[in-house]
Length: 87
Image (cartoon, rainbow, N blue to C red; front, side, top):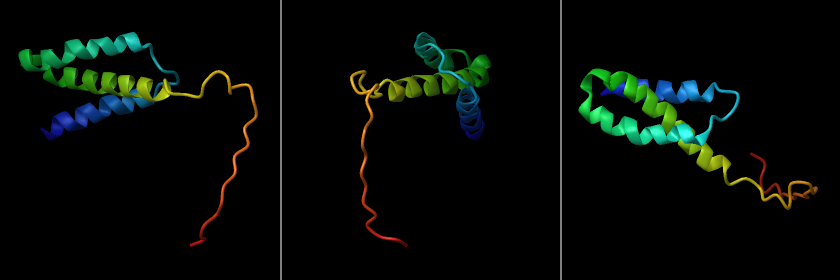
């Protein structure tokens, strides 16, 4: 169990090393790898690694898809803040 968690996290770490976000079409392989985890015990460790990588891809694509709208990308924005306390 612990080995599976470490391998899943190593798939996420390898994904984080990419300089660009791969195409989200690769995330569809997650639908294939999860059932194979149940039916192919020989390939369990590589499939856990691939699942971690693909899960990070789908999660990052979801977060980055909610960027700013194109209407405000070319405009300067003014941001104001208040310091409520200094520790």
